[in-house]
Length: 191
Image 1 (tube, rainbow, N blue to C red):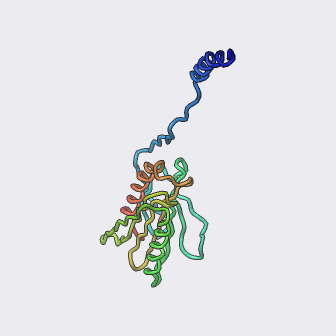
Image 2 (tube, helix red, strand yellow):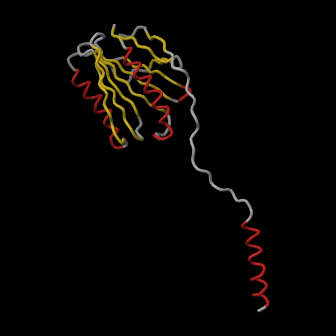
Image 3 (cartoon, rainbow, N blue to C red):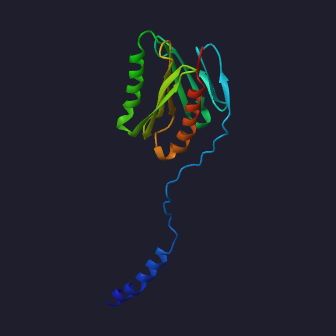
């Protein structure tokens, strides 16, 4: 009986001492703040059959040709682990096939996407026509597009990040680089 009395007296004291120690508490998940540079652009005017303006914080990288035809280049943003992959092809009676391929590639992300918005670009003075696919959600590519003059030139592009897609953490970067993609499309000229 005396043992039970001692336990009932000392047990609350021991619990109070142990409970009052500072145990680590998990902190809520947060994301790093990403600071972006000011928007300034330079002209790409080289051997390619097109010109456009791209950001000064990006680098042009010639990619190995992954197929037997066309030109492959990227606008690389190493500080942000991002790339705008570009592939150029001459149109030889296959415009419908090329545009359908671009649409299919964009809509392959449907299983991960929350929504896919299409934005049409038309500039008859420069003969630049195309569609930008804004892919919402945790898809591998958040922005894809194609532009063409409808008779000779065709350029397809896609924005990728070298990281696991997470729409919440990538949202500021996607918004920032989407503006660069739109600027690229709006300044594109065919040679």
